[in-house]
Length: 231
Ligand SMILES: *Cc1c(COP(=O)(O)O)cnc(C)c1O
Picture 1 (spheres, protein in one colour):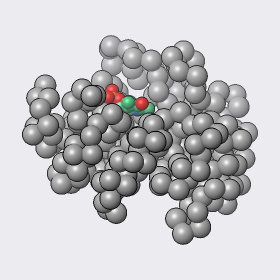
Picture 2 (tube, helix red, strand yellow; picture 1 turned 180 degrees about the horizontal axis):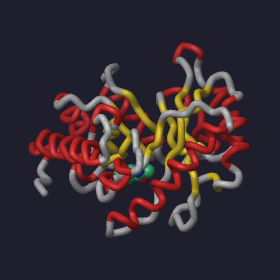
Picture 3 (cartoon, protein in one colour; picture 1 turned 90 degrees about the vertical axis):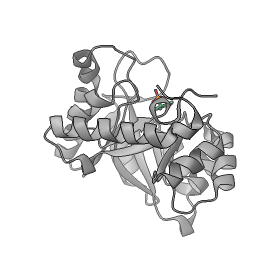
Picture 4 (cartoon, protein in one colour; picture 1 turned 45 degrees about the horizontal axis):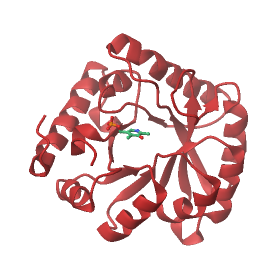
């Protein structure tokens, strides 16, 4: 892999071409899959380079680092997605600086984000993070508790519930990678039958984006393959 910063446009292009190929293999329109460039632990210069190459959506995990970078990049064309673990004492900054949150998993955090979302900013687009089983981290609502949380979140006026997100443990072969992604898609379809109009599946990272696209991902979250190793 070409890791030096000057190769960023090439890496970006190669990720977009992986998405394109996977979408065609799945019989899907490549435009139905968006690339979220995960810029955590990457310098603002790398974000600016990706923005000059045409990338518009960025994902960050750590609130303080993210807010500093969002302000320093200062590019109003960019959309920022919070994809890290959400803590109660950080919700205000997330509600004020991000357009999307992928990792909502508790009612208490949802009501805080709703209360703290500034009125000039429009509704906060939210995804519920689902814990499918053996995830290494602690985050995520269980499949059993998902319908109830979806009902609660969809009633909050400053949030707009858009879909689901998952972070499965790494697996090497594509068949194994597809299992949790398929499960997340089925959970989205189930919520649809319960009356929720959801259109977003955030799944797939550098190592498993093809499997995710084959199972219906509409946002893939790619860090290393776009930016190179994290500093
Ligand atoms: C870091 C991170 C990514 C990107 O991972 P890569 O393997 O570098 O592509 C995606 N999603 C989440 C939630 C992350 O924390």
